[in-house]
Picture 1 (cartoon, rainbow, N blue to C red):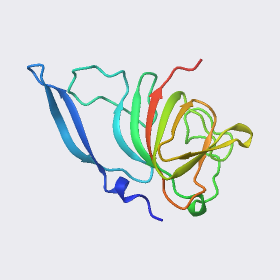
Picture 2: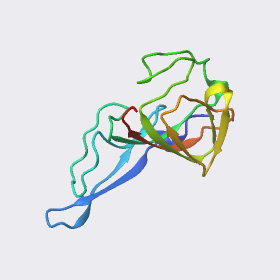
Picture 3: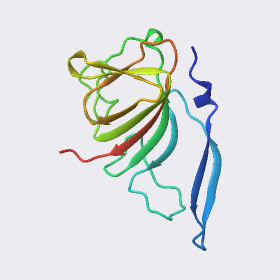
Length: 163
C-alpha cells in the first residue's frame, strides 16, 4: 500500500509548439515527477496563447481566474491517514471542518484507476471509480479513500471569479 510508483517515478510529458516557420514541432520531451501531493503536468496563470512556445508562467497550487493547473493526483487510504483536522491556511477560501474546503475554481477530475469518495454537505458521499468523471464547481467538499489502494486521478483546475 505505497504511494503509486507511477507518480513517484514520473510520467513522460511531450509538449508541442510552433517554430519560427509556423510549423508544429515538439518543444519539450521530458520526464516530470511528483510527490504525495501530486504530479504537476502543466500550469498557466493566464489563458493560453496559441502558437506561443514559451513555457507559461504559473505561481502556486491554485490558479487565478483564467489560470489552469493540470496534475495527476492520488490519496492515501483513510486507514493509513491521521485523523483530519481543520487547517484554515491550507485552502484558499474556506476550511470550516476537518478536511472540508472550497476553492474559487471549476475542477475536472477523471479517475484513472482505483476508487475515491467525494463528500458534500449533509454527509452526502459519491463513490467515483476508474473511468468516472467529476465536475466540481467550487462547492464545499472533502475527499475520502475508504478502499485499500491509492487511486490515480487526472485533475484539471480552472481558476474562476467569485459570483
